[in-house]
Structure formats: structure tokens, C-alpha cells
Image 1 (cartoon, helix red, strand yellow):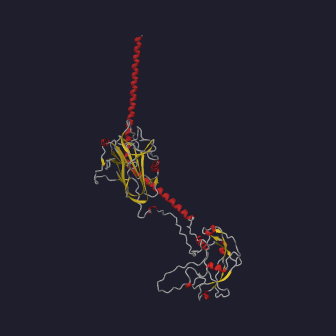
Image 2 (cartoon, rainbow, N blue to C red):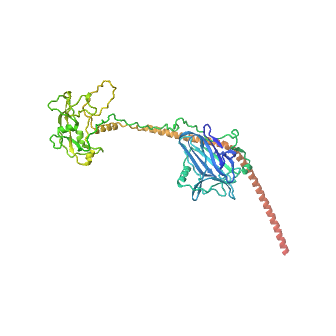
Image 3 (cartoon, rainbow, N blue to C red):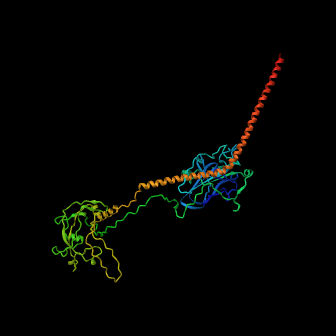
Length: 574
């Protein structure tokens, strides 16, 4: 049997197969149930056949779920869920095995055709259950639609086959003459697999309702032939001889646009805004020259400025040799430029180690400044690694003009005796950033470089503080929605729910009208039958009254004869 949804690309085809055969079983007497729109047919089977369900689905969908009911009991559920709406091509709907509950657990086994138990009496005027295999397909046609199953009987609710001597078979023209059994020679499922299959049975189905229902009434070949059903479909039929697919009696939903992935699921009413990336401070901390101090040297800590009178400090010559400086006589300054070395920042913080821990110095001395002269070169002759001449014995004619007097505040140096301090503390000298060396083609004149500033850059910790302040000072946050926008969004959602409810009611009303139109001839037939039954009831009532009168006359006549006999007996006795 095959069905399709009008004005869409969705269609499905389902058949029954017997084990060991490739072709599906023939189908007789195909019909459409006027009450729920299910499509049904009669399928001939033999005792001992292993039956399985096979089918295909074509069309655009995102999620799909199909259930198989055997004799009115949910025996298997299979689902498919994708990330977006796509076109499915020959999506399999095969169900080879079915779930069966026993005392030891759950079996996933084969269906086997068996004989009916003796004394079976099918009840009429009930939904068809015994002798029927039903396939229910649920398809997601609109994003977000789903429904829950209520009042259903699953394999866990019923032990064994699940029917008694009076199972409901429905008011079918051909009563069932066989049943479905299960192969018992299998191992029960483990708990993990059983729980996974149970979860598939209880999840919500996609769509607001079941998309298509297929009913296969399995009977013996003799019963179908005696009932006079015509052959509808068999596997060897030509394409031109096959019946036309049945149109589903449901509201057709247009196929969503799948040209852009996920385009059908975009919420147009969403007000969410993405936060912009945080701004990066333009100020970067200049790189400091690497320290040449070795592990063998004594570790010194920087604190207050040194004093010339202190017994625990270096003298000027040792300090100049330590920092690579040269001095000239104090009485011959030739330049008015001065250079101040910041001293308060380092002296307040104490010693900084590599693990960001601060260790106070052992001794704090009085602050005193030393006035001296620093020798510098012209910018064109300076080394790329610094601005001072590392060689104290070097002499140059231009040094007299470039000599700059400066006021230098040297750090206090105290001795640390702990091994941990020796390993972690290394003297750090603040200097100008390294200049990137630029390559020029051979023979080209040296470019003029601007005069380098002799002001020392701020310490590393100040640069990090400035950078963090710049980043945190101008935070970029998404603006909070206003009260009016929230109210407008709530109003739009309420209107959307109202429109959805009205559309749902309209769909139900249209479906009810279609069912009423299909049900009209049956209602007319029922009215005629009611009239005939009422007429027969009146005739029966009249006949019953006549019988009562005749009975009364007969009783009176009998009493008369009995009284005469008694009188004759009494006369003979006298």
C-alpha cells in the first residue's frame, strides 16, 4: 500500500514480507477507514511463516518516528532525528524483529504465524486488534510540533501474546483464523538495550498527529477467497497495472525552504544580540633586555635609593660597572639636559619574583640622590640593544658634546641569604625597548632616524595596570531590552499562540467535515436499518400480544376441561 500528501513531496509505501522471500505478500481488498483515514488491506499468510514489515519513505522532513502494533499491542518503535529539514530518499521503514515480554526479561524476536486457540470467539463492533498488523508513521512537517501517546498498550503491559479466548477482532467481513506467535529460542536483552528500546517507545512523536496509518489484516488464503476480495496488488504487477496511491485525509503542509540550512527554524521575533569582542588596549609593555646575571652571583633586592654613607652599599665605581655607565668629572658639565630615573615605584613595592610574589627587603635606607654624568652616543651610532656604551675605556671625540649630566637615584642593594631567594631573584634593569632592525638593499643611504628619547619607559607593572584599566574602563555590554520591547514581544507571542489555536481548530473542523461527508452514506444506511428494526420490533410486539391472548384462551379452556373431569369423578364416587 502506498500513500502521499497532497501538494508536497512526502509519500510512503509499506508491505508485509515472509522470511526467505524477496517479494512482498499480495494484497486484497484495499480500503480507506472513514473514521481515522487509515488505509487497510487483507494479506494471505500460512501457518509457520515468519512475518516482517518493510517500507520506504520519501520527502522533506527533519524527524520521523514509526510504530508497529501486532494484534493491538505496541511491539516496536524506531525513530530518526536530523539537524535540519532535508529531502529523504528511500528512507527505510523495515522492522524485522519485535519485542516480547516473558518472566525472565524482554525478547527481541521474530513473528511466527500460529493457529488460533480452541474455542476462540471474536467480539464484534470493536476496533480491529486480533489478526491485524498496524504501522503508524509520524513525520515532522513544522518545526517544534510534537504529541504524546495516551492510553496505549505496550509490550510491557501485557505478558505473552496478550489476548484471551474472546479477543476483539472488529466488525470485519473476514474474521481472523490465525494469530501471531513469537520465536522463544532467543536470549533476553540486557538491561541497557531494554531501557534504550523502552525509551524509544515512550518519547514524544513528531507532528501534531499521526501522519499515516497502514493496517494489514492477515488471513488464510482460503478465508480471503471465500470472502470474495479482489486482488489489489502483487509484486509481479506492472507499473501501469498498479493502483494509484491513496491521498491522505490530512491538511497538507507546504515543504519548508531548505536552500539555506536551518532557514526554516530561524526565530524572527528573537531580540538576542551578540556581544562585540572586547577592545584591546593600544599601549603595549616594551620588552626588557635579558638579564646577564648568573646563578652564581649573589641575589640582590631593590628597595630605597642608596646612600653614599651606607656601609652595605656599592660605591659609585662599582655601581657604574654594574649598570654599564661611564662618569666624567662633576665640574665640567657641557649639556643642560637631565635624565631622571624613577625611584619611588620600585622602592615601594619591594622585590618581585617570577611567581608574582612580593618579598620585602631586609633593610630600608635613607633616600639620597647621586649627581653624575652619563655618556651617550648620537642616534645614528647607537647600538640596537641599548643607549649606553658598554665599554668604559672607549674614547670618542664627540663625547664631550653629547655628555649629559643626570641625577641618578640608584637602588639599594641588600643581601639575601636564602637559597629560594637566590634562585628566584634576579636584578631587573629598566631600559628603552629594543629597536626592530630593518633590512635595506645594498648601496642605499642610511635612513635618518629620529633622535631617541632618553626618558626611561614606565615599569612593567605600571604598563600592565594601564592596559587593564584601559580594557576595563570601557566595557562593551549588550544593551538590556526596554520594558516596552519586552511587552511588545509578549504581545506578539500571545497573538501567535492565538493564531495557532485558531488554525488548529480550523484544521479539526475541516477534517470533521471530510469525515462527515465520508460517513454520510453509512449514516443513511444506519437510518434505514433503524427504521427496519423499529418496524420489526412493532411486528414482534403485536405478535407477542397475540400470543399472550392465545395463551390465555388456552389456559381457560384447559381449566374448563379439568373442572369437568373432576365433576365426573365426584359423581362416580357418590
